[in-house]
Image (cartoon, rainbow, N blue to C red):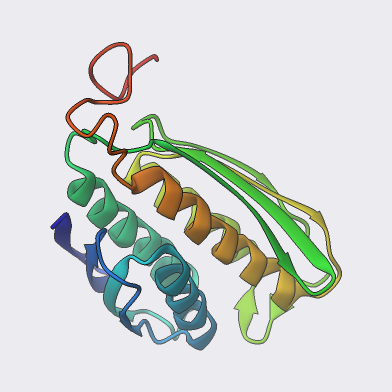
Length: 199
């Protein structure tokens, strides 16, 4: 089983995250931010990655540090669970509709982190959460997990739907990318023989 557990402790947050890439979508998440919990549950359920997260943060200031550091911790757990990435399909993509919204997510589990974020919100806040923090979570996750990640909302009006379609799209694309390719289960999917660096 490809599993990992990460602890991240700073003056701003205290976080533990564990993943099982070969799970069935079980989750146990408590970050202190209700909407973020809901999105992480969607990520787990639709990727079939078992996910456990516990976070304590300086929420009396704002949600920024906790949101970003949760992204880092979950991403780092995914990176560790992938190991040298032998046998993975590597690439994943998804079109994720939610009512009037459609988001496209494509990724390469290349160990060369990069985020392209083309998502626009009509409001500054979604409930108590600043909508700009969703980009921060995706940036932190992509960087820590070693993903080239492109997220583009093609159209949509409802901010809740836009965010949820981004997380569900990530889940489905990630599920494809980390699955073991039975035809190449003993090989790293790169002509270089390793993932990271250029090509």
